[in-house]
Amino acid sequence: MAATDAPDVLTVPAPADLATMVVGIVAVSTSGPLMAATAAPALAIAFWRNGLATAVLLPWTLARHRAELRGMRGRERRLAVVAGGFLALHFATWVPSLTFTTVASATALVSTQPVWAALLARRAGARIAPLAWLGIAIAVLGAAVLTGADVHTSTRAFVGDMLALVGGMAAAAYMVAGSQVRQHVSTATYTTVCYATAALLLLMTCIAGGRALAGYPASTWWRLLAVTAGAQLLGHSLFNRVLRRVSPTTASLALLFEVPGAALLAAVFLNQQPSAGALPGLLILLAGIAVVVAARQRGTAPSVPVE
Image 1 (cartoon, one colour):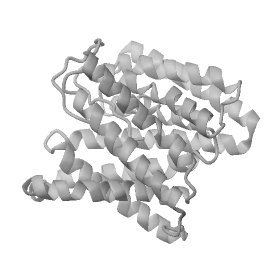
Image 2 (spheres, rainbow, N blue to C red; image 1 turned 180 degrees about the vertical axis):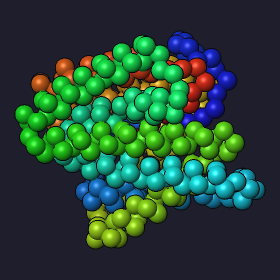
Image 3 (cartoon, rainbow, N blue to C red; image 1 turned 135 degrees about the vertical axis):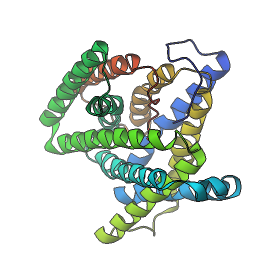
Image 4 (tube, helix red, strand yellow; image 1 turned 90 degrees about the vertical axis):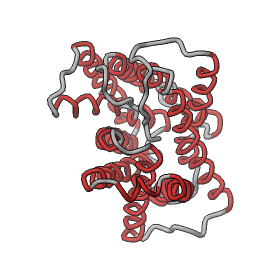
């Protein structure tokens, strides 16, 4: 999530920015399929993804932002840790959901993040535009249709859907807490503290639950490196870059293409397709999220996902 001077309106990006967003969408779209194909415990995947990202970011932050890191105020530190806690909860629910339901369903349901962020903003006293309420209603309908179809598929798929929904809620809380920190703290410093907190919490959870953290085949380590470099670092970095010139609304709408992108990759490489009954729910859900994003209030934080 990056600060931006770009106007908060729908715009047609410049060709260079459009190309950058396409690469970013491809990068984040690999997240679900890669983790679904990784032969390691789900919580261990979540730990290593955040741990490896922290290992990359920490030297840079210590070299370039050491003074800022030391000078963070108590409230900023607490909020960064709280955001890291919600990020850990996001990964601890969304990554396991990929083993229960399809990549398409899990990715679509976790993408409800803007819906939950809008409801959190309303709870904090912010006004929600009528169009956003309409989008929330459409998204809820789509989620109901999608999860209803998965109930008929299997109880296991429904459990995966519920985990993905909780992951979306946690991602929204992470975004809201993080947006307050980033008013005064750079992206690098905030992200390092947040990822390190998430990695530590996930490590403790893995140890307490007896999850294996090593002993994987080489192919598993390559997939862990790929999801960290692609979705966690490259994808988010590219969208932070274009947010300097592209409106948050345009970028957030573009990021919804992660859902069909992840579904396509899962179909090609995992031979995994959503059921015919789930497709209407997926389309309605995405339409509702798009309406919520398009109706977001000027001045609110851009909704860059964490997948």
